[in-house]
Image (cartoon, rainbow, N blue to C red; front, side, top):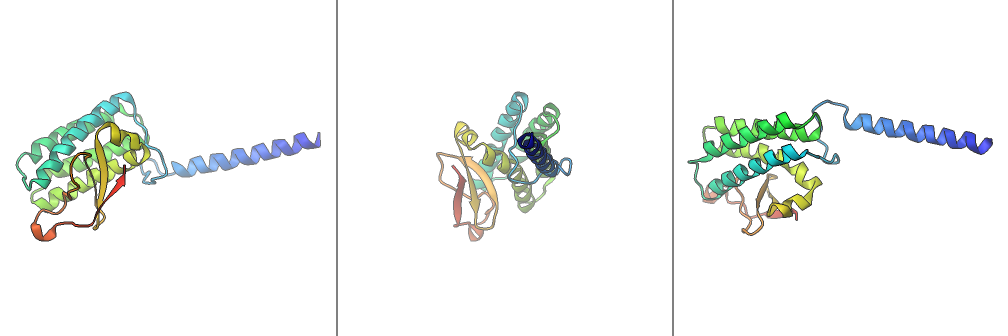
Length: 183
């Protein structure tokens, strides 16, 4: 009888602690910026993410070739795919990620000069980072690596290419301190 009473109390305490932790993780609807939360997405959203990544890689290639022509078309494709991802994903971290990708793609569409384009691209990269941090196998599946330069920006690039920072558009701003974050 005494053991049963203590077991019940312990279970109740563990249950209360568990509920408190879950409540803190999702305390602010739509504002989960913690890298501790695993971002998951559904199959439909995954298909849209593939389209986002295709456009993203095209934009990255334009940046490293120092070309701005064609970025707007790719940003439109990324925006459309991200919007479809938002519509297909239920409320949660996966939808939140797709919303941020959509916002970044829309910023990229509206960007005038190269610095604005790079800032918008950085927004998209930062939105995608937690997903690939949660699922590094998706990097391998998509033939990508996640890199970071010395000024703190992240980007995804092809695994088969040398690491080149898309945020240094001029020779004088070339980034030499690049590291691979997630393999």
